[in-house]
Image 1 (cartoon, rainbow, N blue to C red):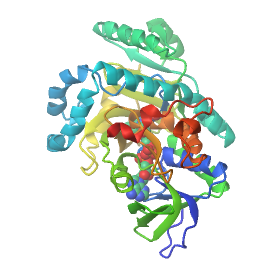
Image 2 (tube, protein in one colour):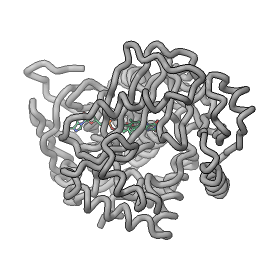
Image 3 (cartoon, rainbow, N blue to C red):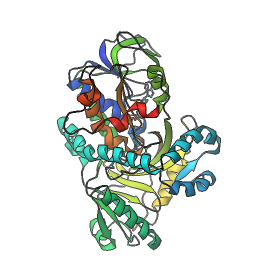
Image 4 (cartoon, helix red, strand yellow):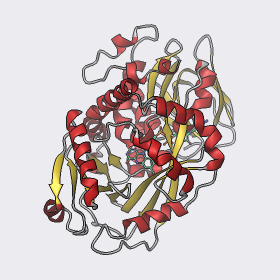
Length: 433
Ligand SMILES: Cc1cc2nc3c(=O)[nH]c(=O)nc-3n(C[C@H](O)[C@H](O)[C@H](O)COP(=O)(O)OP(=O)(O)OC[C@H]3O[C@@H](n4cnc5c(N)ncnc54)[C@H](O)[C@@H]3O)c2cc1C
């Protein structure tokens, strides 16, 4: 990545701001269409939320991040600093408008719209990743081996059954597994686990940062330039867009905003719209000595975290913390994941050399990303993928390339006529007024 003090002027059709999974996959797709692309990021590619996610291609997760049970959890969220859901008291005034919108989205009509919107993307996601990785000789980086949700308390069974029936209703492939099936397929897990749901249409990646690096290499091979700089302001002009970074001013015909949880300010500058984007901070603990500990990703229903077997060790990940973009991480929450794993396996997991991490999930209150083309085609938007940014990155890139591949003035429904793409309406910026 270039970061020389006197950068050369940039001549690009499309400037992509943000080199996370969404920005990098989209940059590659755009370059393959013949666009000259530059990607700008404050950091090296893939050091944001995309670095430390749980690596789960979570196509089964078609429900919004909250349902009515969150109302009961709210007091606990405020009281328990180590709980799976945590709301920092100091952040409460900032979070309230977002939480209010989240509550309004629990009403049946918007809730059903969110489920349909998430489901439409997820249904296409695994195949999109398989296409993308095959095209960069990276098919081995994805294991389409399914994933398992386990429960251990008999009183949880009705919750599991209710979830299974809602998932069947949404046509999510799901199998019920009893204790014996779990022991047969994942003998490392404790016999105390009573059963679970297996999702055959899911998978996991060997390491998200390996995926990013493979995509960056492929994008560079297609002529994409990566430059380490922070975009401070952005403006639509008569002929394109002007971006001012900490190192220079540059112009491009179009911009793609893919700054994850940091996308709101530039969206407001470019479109005049204030999007209710907040962050659900999440943590992981990487256990580098745990190899072959699991055959696929396993989530605990009661303990509410996931364990994913990666090439670099076992990753324990999860938790949601509302504390904004500026508060320092509370790494005790990451270490807590190791304590939470006690009792799920036949032996305690080895935490020697473990590394904690925190990242910012980019979250909108309706649990849908913004994927859109606005300002006469000069501004493309792809952010807000909350818990599903890895899952939905490859299909998002296909949509963005399709939107960019048509003339700015042509109607979006024409752009989206390509078979295998979902209708764009649920993801449009205009839903926020
Ligand atoms: C603990 C945890 C576990 C998760 N597990 C999963 C999972 O298993 N499956 C799944 O599908 N998803 C998961 N996610 C969610 C997923 O990681 C995110 O949705 C996804 O990484 C978002 O990608 P992105 O490219 O939009 O954002 P990011 O990866 O955050 O990238 C945005 C980039 O923009 C850059 N940037 C921001 N502002 C500027 C600026 N002004 N100028 C230049 N650069 C800028 C940042 O430096 C950053 O590199 C998880 C997230 C967390 C935190």
